[in-house]
Amino acid sequence: MTTTRPSGLTDAFLESLVARVPGSSGATWKLTEVYTGELLVELPQSTPEDIERAFHAARAAQQLWAQWPLKKRLEVFERAHTLLIDNALTTTDLIQAESGKNRRMAIEETCDPPMIISHYLKRAPKVLTPKKHGGPIPFLSSSTEVHVPKGVVGIIAPWNFPFATGLSDAIPALMAGNAVVVKPDNKTALSPLYGISLLEEAGLPKGLFQVVCGEGPDVGPTLIDNADYIMFTGSTATGRVIGERAGRNLIGCCLELGGKNPMVVLDDVNVEEWVESAAFGVFGNTGQICMHIERIYLPESRYDELKDAFVERARNFTIGASYDFGPEIGSLVSPDHRDRVAAHVEDAIAKGATVLTGGKPRPDIGPAFFEPTVLEGVTKDMLAGRTETFGPVVGLYSYRTVDEAVKLANDTDYGLNASVWSGDIARAEAIAERIDSGNVNINDALATAYASKATPSGGVKSSGVGARHGDQGLLKYTDVKNVAVLKKQVLGARPGQDYDAYVKQMLQSLKLMRRLRVR
Ligand code: NAD
Image (cartoon, rainbow, N blue to C red):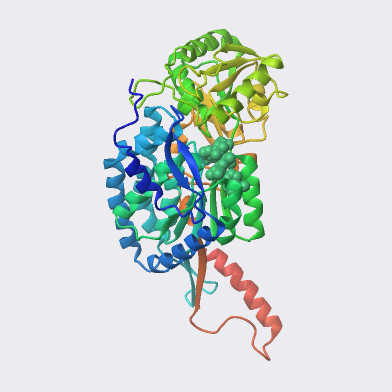
């Protein structure tokens, strides 16, 4: 196992990345390598004045960028697609160093922005080209739907997929003609900073994509007050704060929040196919995926068999601190987060849950490691039973009837992702319809829905407002302008006109247009 920091991550390289972050007060944040706790780089912290200046520069760059023809803007992303892929291994090293995730998850994360670029290169010309519709008076009027950029989009990103959330949500905003000011999490600012440097190498105008850094409550208010739209990914608690402020400012926002995602396994499931995917759905990225599974509902008739297979798989995961592909499970992001996960497990044990495997931190491997943990007997009075743990912890539950399973799956404030497993897809689809969730994966845990870039993906209930991906993921960064043309003045009653005749004529023409299917 290679625990030594990759040789490419030199001090000079890391300092060059953080050099673009404004920090006029001189205050810095110690950004550390998760596997060892050692300092990687001092990250500048932006003051409110720095943030205002970043918006000012972004706004100036946006005025010019919005005038570029769409084709020319998209050419930048054609080149960026290649550069992001050609430099994916450097990005992977950065993601691993700052987040502690294992290499498989880090390299998979690097694929997200190229997938987004590829989708919107195909879709943006169709979605953003003005669309002419008929006006109220056939042949004499028309109305054109024009999508204009919002201006400067503020993006607030979390630490669990820093490169994907820092870049992928910015790409459609930029394609639509906006500038972006992103605030990554302090812990994981390096990979998005590197990604932005690659976009600029591809030809993105300097100044168009700004980065500001700092603790959320320090940076958030100035960022939201200067933005024309906010794209936020993070916890439900923070989402409420962001949404309130955006609402007061009368700007739009998209809030992608937490989950307590259920998996319903039907009695006809193939255990071999299910167990590997379910284990990844729970423990992938050390359980720090917003769509990961925290509750598994198993049929009573096969409970012991499925439980034993799942616990066996969880017990056999290799855990480690390594920059190669050895360990299947990496670290949690920080000792603070490890303590939160441990607190959920301890609370569950204290209130009567049973640990089937795992349950403990692993300081012998690194400061923030925690074992893959399977619990039984979790109830809603436990933290792990009702709130998001966001770690490698899952509860197993038994159900008798499908109706009961659906009821249990829906018994949560969240609604981000769900998974249904069956040998009969139609049967699983019927259950998917009954689950209150923005995403439902059938015979997969989470990746199929997330990687389907043509379909909007977001949360319902306390899991969010709005969506990323699909046409909606591009159009949300635009305002619509309705440009209407009347070729001849024929609308409305004229002075001296017989009103009875006017009313009759107007109502008859409504019926005629309906019959001709003009309106
Ligand atoms: P968090 O809400 O604590 O932080 C997210 C970001 O918001 C960080 O950059 C943070 O600095 C910033 N922030 C915190 N307080 C702020 C404030 N008052 N004003 C402005 N910004 C503020 O969340 P986290 O712990 O970093 O991330 C994990 C959470 O994110 C989990 O709940 C997870 O489910 C969720 N998440 C959701 C999605 C999704 O697509 N739905 C994706 C990834 C993560």
